Length: 138
Image (cartoon, rainbow, N blue to C red; front, side):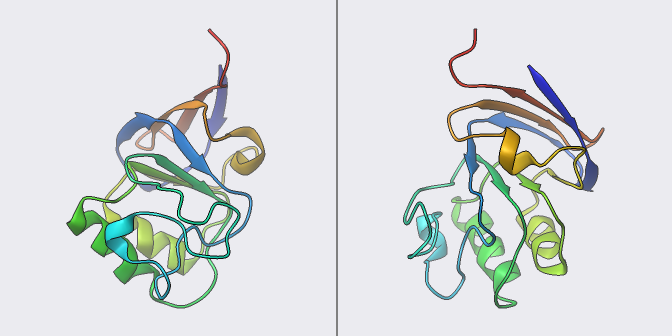
């Protein structure tokens, strides 16, 4: 079990499989319909669903459509269960707030290097903790 410590963006608890990506901007508001709950075209995992997963990403870039996109995923039931943001920006912070899911940032280690798709993750954003059980471990 690996433990990471970070700063709370939105308090709360969640657990599940992560959807982790090394590049910024997990969703493109202009190019991906919120009902899809998936990544935008041209990303390393085009169309991969993040619905019901712990979304792990380095930062946000692009347009200010982030908040509208993530609010729509919440309203449509396609939102992630939590967000882990390596470097917070106003776009990613607002996206987390309107999604209303537990969110952490400024972790003591880079979550994009530690957390992999397929692991099991428990997010305690109220206390600034993430527990990672790597895939393949008992």
